[in-house]
Image (cartoon, rainbow, N blue to C red; front, side, top):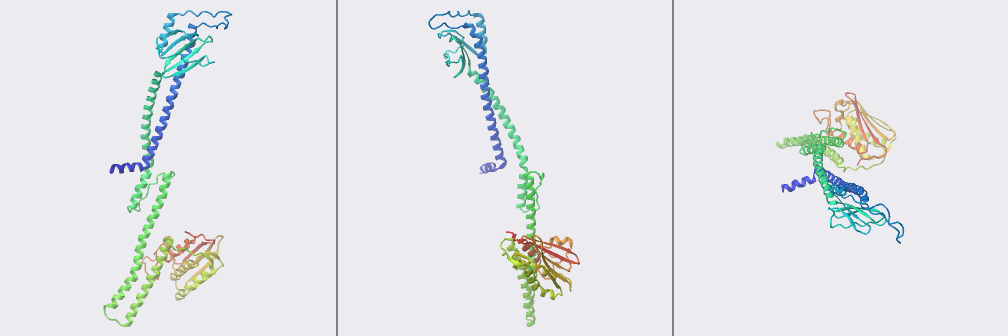
Length: 477
């Protein structure tokens, strides 16, 4: 079982698959080169032997046949010259030298009479056929190569050699070339494996880092090395993904802790008041106070739960917007009207400067985002302060501004102001009301419309929120 699983792991490994295909391709190339070498070497040696046999034939032809021609068919005309006298001693020496080099010879006249045949002439060989119109020809027979040269008088000299010896020589060279090719294949395969291991090392590092992250170490990052390589660029992208994942997990942990904290306070108030009232009999007005405390705490929990539900809907893409053509100034006047009682209670003046703006947006959601900003501007303002609400258009954007003369936000905290459950007050007091989710909801609604929200604030002088939403709907999926 372990062996089969190990084999399966190897066959599925990119490294081993690349190594296998690389080695297979290398073997194929080496095999083709060796086959080409064998064919070329064989043909080259045949051409060389043929050239030698041609020279030998031209050399020995005058020893057996005199130059001249046959007389005419009717017998008239001069008689052909007599054949030359053969120097037997010189011929013997020449034949021995020729046989030593692997050749054999035969001389056959026009009457098919064998005038000479070297001792090494194979008994199984007949004279090769001569194609018409060709004074010389090469004939390859099983085990032999023959060259025949024919005179005008139909006399022939045949030079032959063994192709078996030639084949053995070529085969020996091919075996040597194959051994060299095999050695080259082994060496290049080992070098290729080292290169593969070095090249794929970043992938192993990525896999190991991903494994540690999957086990819960979200601070793990991949060593990017050279960011110009493909794997370096992949490592950079994955590191960004891991950073976002770590931030998301941290937000989830913080969200759970914050939600638990926010719910703990009203629940504790309800339980404390109920326990106090149930310890012993109380006057009716005391029970009424207990009911009022429970009602306020329940209202706070209801508001918190509704806010959490809204954020969860946007996170899961279930909160679908219903964009319609709207007059932005009418939506803002309605939001001002809703916020006015809270402003009057705190002696805050609400000022408006609204230009006619028509755009396509979800009226209810956009109104909620502006109400959240106005409520915060009133809640964190100084007594007898001012809140201004403006709207105007830019070339492609509808702009909304909510500014106040309140306490402001420290510069170092402005990047966190839109985080869920974030409060500028580190004591996390609920005295000012709210759950710390209003600005997070506002940003989520604005971004769902394809827009953005920006804060500029100065401590002790106030804050200014500017929303920009495309005039044409660019709603996020």
